[in-house]
Image (cartoon, rainbow, N blue to C red):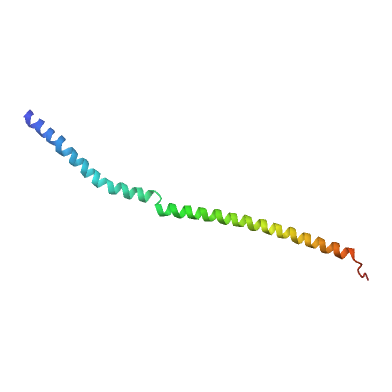
Length: 96
């Protein structure tokens, strides 16, 4: 009886466990892959996020540049008005 138990255990360990391991590997591998894709961000989504982040940074830079240009134009207009006032103030005007 002991010899039969030893034979069954030996067969189980030499054949059964490797077969069980391979079956588990092939059964769980697609499941784990699908779960990882479902829970984690996809490659395309990461690329899209990176492109959008880059685009937002570019738009912010352009906005800053336009703001600086508007400030320069406002200063130039103020300077032009001051020059016109001085030119108008230096010449006699009709006062009635």
